[in-house]
Image (cartoon, rainbow, N blue to C red; front, side, top):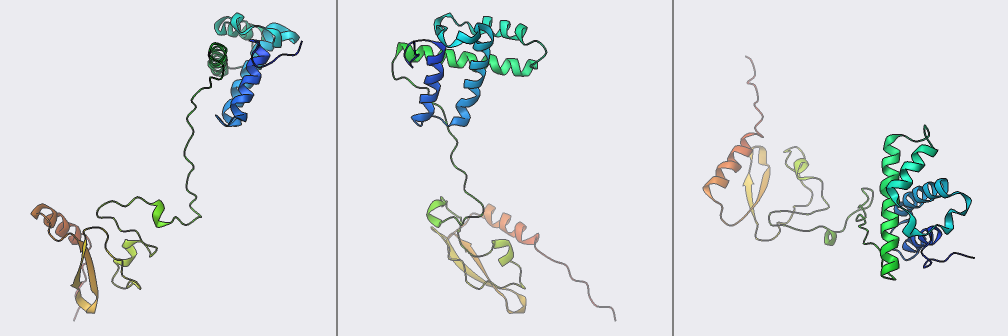
Length: 204
């Protein structure tokens, strides 16, 4: 007799795992380790007809103990621990599915990472107060007096561009709020001090 997803057998549990992938509830990479562990353990304990084993008769602790004895020396303790966790999960999920037809686990998936080789559009970057997003080189490069900015960065939000003339004819731009606290002014002054480059006087 052919096994089906809802017949409560070990083979039905395997079909259930496949359905989780086919319905887009999880990736094959997430489900395959569970499927492999469950199949190996149950088939080792119950033999060729393992697919007919009723899920209610599978005690993960008992099956893993027997599997460990049958495969002694083949798996490390870490692998056996991982297998026990996976078999327990499959049995738990399939029992819930049998009790509540259609039930599937809520498996969290990672958000796709933004490739470093692809440019990110401004709309994809959240803007916070005080942040400036531009396609120009990094602000650190723009602050070097010998490398003037080809295109000035426009301030965002409530920031105002304050021009500040430097020695040698260079014009710097400070993007600041219309007013700042004394504490912020002191911290800004201390930061600017860290950019000072001391020059030595020429010897006569």
